[in-house]
Length: 396
Image 1: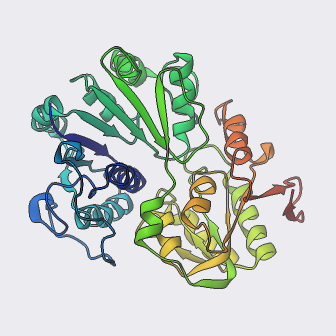
Image 2 (image 1 turned 45 degrees about the vertical axis):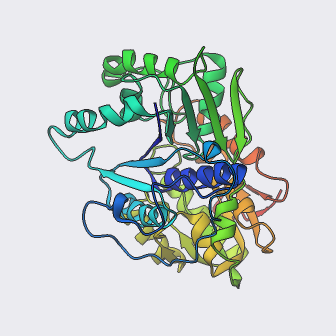
């Protein structure tokens, strides 16, 4: 088997594949694992590409023994259906092509027959891949792909804080389930249970198979799994440092859309954060609803921004506020790394139990508290007293 194959379904996954490729290239003293050279048409996207700001590539010419060179890496984008994710992925795909990677855009959710067509078209590359890199081990699509082959080497890159839950579940030998889902199995989960069970075994180390987690998050390495640190070296080399503004920026979350946090509590706390910290902009999560964002803009006066790239790249390019306030999410771990040495302060506002909806998973509070509690030491922690609308948010 030859070559390396990455499956991504979100912009952040593709960013972290780029970070992984940069880390591998740095270790071997060569270029990132591309097919040919930056700008080549080998990885052309289906449909018109979208322009992105570019900077000179930081990769050095290949050096050393060719036998030590990193095998070619092909990125397969299993395209989602929502427009925001697709737009960000198109821009990230262009950045990946600029770095010399081959990008294959796969309309994996394009209607009837798309699943069978995707599996048929990916069968040969799957069988020939020496290493497979995935961004979301909880994805039913990826789990189905994992049932078709047994890669010798498997790498899981971050797709948010779910990496922490994945590492814990693999370590305990549990079935894979997202933290915000209810514990019981629904009809769809029951039908897919055999696929999930086999995928979990394929995601665990075994004789003849290595498993790596490439992460910026504080995870405890499960037995037999190698954990490699993602320091966002590619992002820092490629962009910035940013111009800093005098105000603060808020980072939105999709906890309302996933049914975890009550919408009224969320709107009120966003307003309190904006007033307390002098925030002027609200960076929306790509899954936040248009109705919620309109309400936030009208009620708080914040400028709602839908980023065209993952927030780590937006913040690194700038301009960005001297303080960034976020709810518990991946960015409280990634932004301090991406913005190291810039003077930007990151703060996390913890989720109070009163904000949770009655329908939220029993695991939600503990998981969110863990995300906030394990943030880097240089991240300020904000406590919120949610009992009355007049309460203020302060540093805890």
